[in-house]
Length: 322
Image (cartoon, rainbow, N blue to C red; front, top):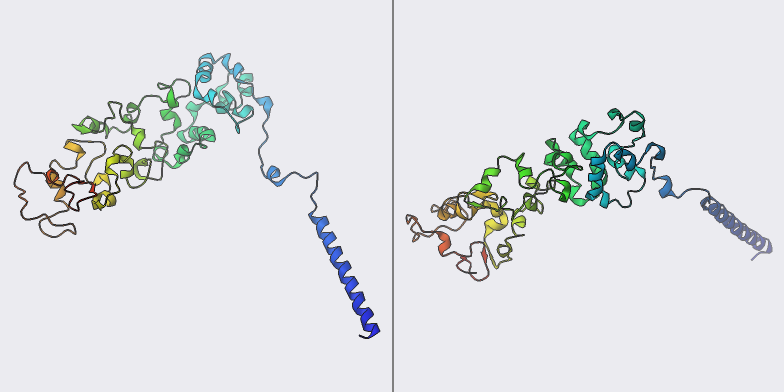
């Protein structure tokens, strides 16, 4: 290689090394953390500062509201205060009613404090959910059927004077539910019914009053039989031979969930009437036809006298036996 060309290549190589080092040094200087800067998570938190001087504490509240203060200290609210709810805005009476200094300085001026009697159902529920939305079963309440009907938290719960200590209910089930759902109350007095009035089953066993993604605020899935199988596990299967209505339409294809004048909560007074809704004599249904040798004129004949495993069978496709 020519000596002059060799020196040129060497010079270019040295310059390239120097340039790369300079760029790296500049990049590191730009990326070096500022020790005085706050972490991104802290600066992005954006929590509004709380003026602790505006909070007077529950002992001050009790000088006028002794009964309410005592009931609060006996309740599950006082027993369950825990992180992340820390600070005066999460403690005692003022956690719900807001800072009390202006109220005290005003000689008990009710306009200077949050009075739940003056709040709408939506406003009062929003205050309750500031804590209770952390509970998964409460997370859908603001879009629930109850909230859409202007039924808020304080419609069913009472912080200071509950009738039922558990969940601070204003009345026990099912009376609490019957207060609005008058149309279903007679069903539980029919000859065949779920034993809600007797206390063996509660409305909230099947329905979530705080809202779900399911129809009628059911607790489990859109397939209603999932609720029924919690108690009627012997009907759940899986079976080798399934009865299609159980899987396709659910239990309510044949049964009424609350109560019925018919045995076994059936939707029809006679079993045959129910079966013939699908198993017709004309062939208009995709279900298997009712055999011609079945005499439907016999008054007390029931399909389930022979087809005993009507919910499903592991041994017989005609459900003769389990």
